Image (tube, rainbow, N blue to C red):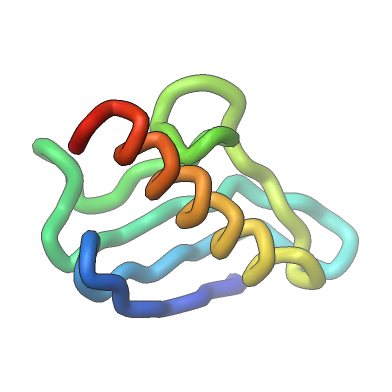
Length: 83
């Protein structure tokens, strides 16, 4: 299992995991947030910084970069929506 934990002002402590990811296999990426998201604490992330759409899948090699990109996309989406 691959994981990446970070802390942000917007979300608090967050941990990304990809339980099935290996060097050769792209697994689905999940996020667990200290503050939670709506009624769920663990959700799959999707491209574009959202939770709906095409689910992010990543191998061990590109995992951290994919998580950081999702965070950048999420912040941009929140600014656009006026959140």
